[in-house]
Length: 174
Image (tube, helix red, strand yellow):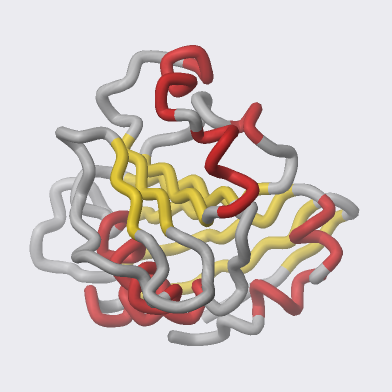
């Protein structure tokens, strides 16, 4: 299910995902829209599927190495196996607040040539760029049986608004 909406500086699409494989497929398809310089911020409860989505992004971007949660190392760089951009996967969960703590990761230096995906990045990395993709994954908290996730993709800034709602809504039903 999707419901695209657009404003001058924003494009938005909502999807319903019913399995981990669909979440990975969403990541693979989303990778086709991404390019070097893109910042993707993932938010959602523990176990919502942020790393699963990032695995799909890694597959779609054709990067080296297994994409796993970088919780303990905070950031991992996955170089491209081809001519595409590397994937920088960051887990900001353990970081306190703001861009100051993120500066040691040199994300501002990596951003122009990489796709940067930040789990738990809300309130911490927005200052890196006005153009970013926010992905919110919602699941019923405490529900260990139901695989249903409601995913809202919000493209912010000219880069995403220029593609209009068509760019994100082209993801369609996964």
